[in-house]
Length: 328
Image 1 (tube, rainbow, N blue to C red):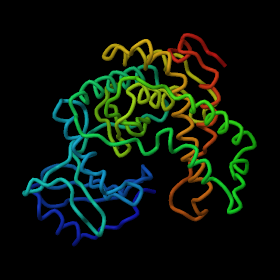
Image 2: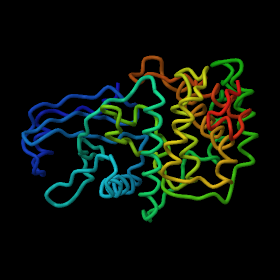
Image 3: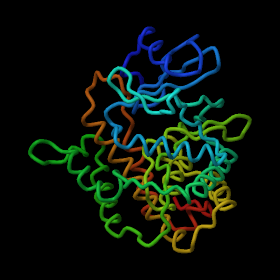
């Protein structure tokens, strides 16, 4: 469930009165996603997504997010752009929440990735990084390496004892190994504005082609290859993280490489970067698992799905990242 803030018909009509997109015909909540309240809106002129940004998205970051997706859309990427009102404003306030109308894009998110889909995503990610080269605004990665040890420490009892073992007996050891590896974080690699969350549910496809890259609300200034690593972790494993699919990895890396030529240093760093990406999602999921009330509307995500990926990446080589060998 991803509708936390309700919007009545009268509130919607008042909101839309500032736009030139016609009157509402239908309006319904979208269940997918966990960060914000999302609605599918159909008006007399077309379809849109109305997003109300909840507390996990800092209001001060929204202008950069919207500027970035507008920049990518203007470059011709499959990124639904923000819709401006009659005053030229894209960021609004609705029911006490920052809000924005986003263009609607056709397509569906895949539940089980194919190599063909992974290759298309690799191409799209490469194009995104190319288009981001002249985007000058910057935002530090709030969930980068400096945040991981403090986040692990927050997965604890009041007396400081870790609760990670309550999730799985193997989890404390995997997190400790990930934190130790992250202490030797790669430096001096190319930096750009990255998506940082390009999971299958943030990609829409139609007839085998990417029609939309969505949900840029973790976008930040970070290592280009880290974005590749996040995408690799998201697309190249089974949902539970128990199986690595080398054919998906090969397709993803071939697609990306057709657009962007990673440096030798970036390729060498990919296993460490991917281990960090897996650790980041393990820890945020673990924190949510421990701190989300049992009766909450949000469905908790299993931290072990990424802890298993973490274990794989800690033993991986650059060749294994390219899908050239199984590697276990």
